[in-house]
Length: 292
Image (cartoon, one colour):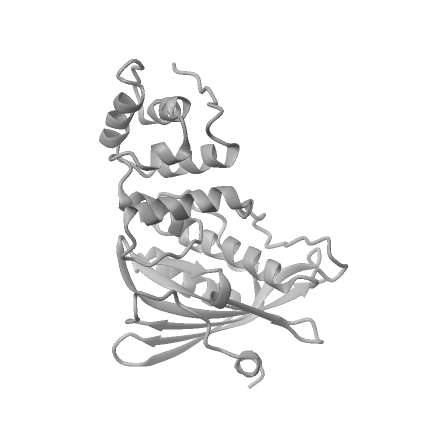
């Protein structure tokens, strides 16, 4: 069996990222890529062995990403899984550049524990950096939610009502064609409805966590509001955009962990694909969503 050799050209983050991306390739593409990268000198018997051989003999992450067998759609899907939103019509060289930036930025957030706890050292209330908290929460939430979609190739994580307050409220507004508004109450029902968007309708939510795609604020009563915009995909087709607002409150009886108290989700079927989706709510709008 082939043993992995970490080439000096790939950092630990690049190795982990490439490994995740290569797992999205078909067995045929992996074996062909192994033959190309190793010049047919390494014989492998499984996709897993092929991935390790490819990583061991690739001189750089950029070289590997530019290989013909590493398809554009695979890189796009990887970025979506990592919560990075790019225009759906991006060319491969643009996706390669964005992926390399992601791996070199130091912003790859480690997986948050499934208890939704978010730790910060800035202050005892954890609110010194709302943007950091909002970013970390969104990366955790959408990775958890998207794992329910079999097409993402991710292992299903512990999605469940334990992440919500018992009296949580979900408002779902769909503007794809006719406008439709629905409301759901209770942790079980809210959890099931959100999960069904991904599990049954096969959607993938890709949040835009940069610049105008994320907005966070807190109230004197301990409520933190996190608003995020992004794109919605099915397979490799971009269906539209979403704008989602979460109301988070700590639970002092459960390790002071953040739990979801309110969710407001708005889905639109069409948008200008040359621009990244952005949060349209101002601070007063956000407060009014949950104080009506």
